[in-house]
Image (cartoon, rainbow, N blue to C red; front, side, top):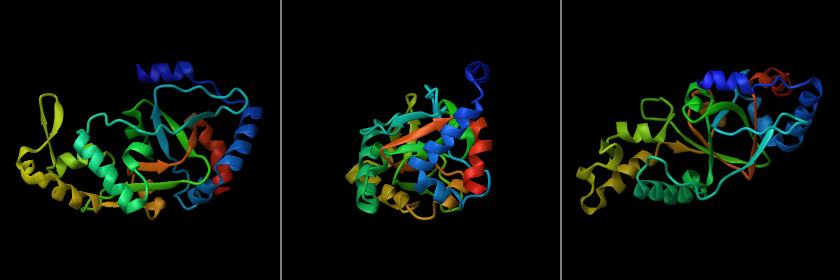
Length: 218
C-alpha cells in the first residue's frame, strides 16, 4: 500500500525544477554538501515522512525542525536523562531538539515515505556505534539489547532490576558512551541513526538523487 501511494504521489521533477533545486541546495545546504563529498559516492541521508509538500519551483519541501520533540516509545525518564547527558556531552539536547535521518532507505521507511534529506545552514550531529561495531540504527532497540528496557503491557519499561536507587542511570551512562559527534562519514556509511541539529531542512524525492549526486561527487 505504501509503495502504491508513493507511486501515485510521485511526479518527476522538470528540467527547470532540477536547476532551481540545485541552486537552492548549493545556496542553503553548503556545509552539508561539503561534508557529503566525503561519503561513499551515492550515499545519501533519508528521512521518513508522512507529509511531503514540494515547492512547485524546485521540488523541495522545506521543513522547520520541531523542538521539544516528545518520545514515541522510549520511557520519559530515559528520554529526559539522555537529553540531559547529551546536553553535557555535545552542547545540545539531541533527543528533543534534533531531526532524525539515516542512510538506510528501509529504516527510514519505518517512519513514513523515505525522502532525501538535506540540513540547511550550519549543523551539528550525534550518532552511536555499539560495542560490537554495529551502528545504532534505532536507539530503542539498542537499549532493549543492552538490557535497560523490557517489553511489558504492549510498551517499553525500565527493567525493574535497575529501578532501586536509580541504578538504571548507571546502566544508561555506559550506554551513552557509545555516542559521538565525530566523523559523520562513518555514521552515514554504517547506517546509523543520525540526530542533526539545524534550524530547517529540505526533503525531496529520492529519484532526484541522480542529479543531486552530480553537485556532490561530480
